[in-house]
Length: 171
Image (cartoon, rainbow, N blue to C red; front, side, top):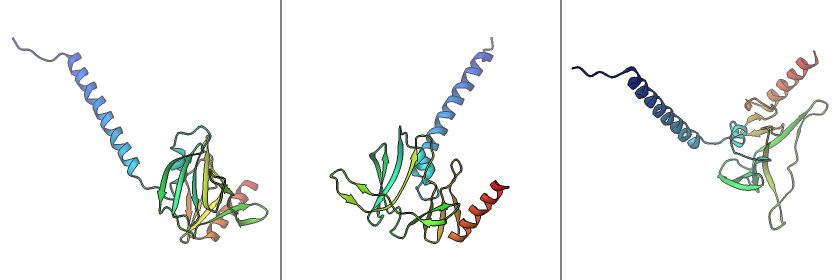
């Protein structure tokens, strides 16, 4: 008498293979995400991926050689050589145009004021500050709420894009 696999047995084997495949693929994706180097272009998404109740923030002090990732006010991670002291932060205002933003005042746990080189914060809804960051002749546009960071070649190109957007909205 010949013994063959039943349809149920074949379906169970196929389901087990599918589950193993799904688990393997998801763990490979996590490994890829962990090795992904953070930069200004993916900073907003990087900060949004930290589980937080209030906010996640990058804070670079002094010469920007070391930056701390703060999640709900607590240091979660430190990034070395993320930026340099040449980083500049700008805001765009409809009436004033583009102007350099003054950095916030920061006091460490001992109450000593520290010089802030760069900071950027994302709240619990995933919304960050509407700023333009200039580094190494590239301009990173963080002013959009739900879209990735846009990179421009110059500050003038960023201003023109912002003014074009305003003209489209005013039509």
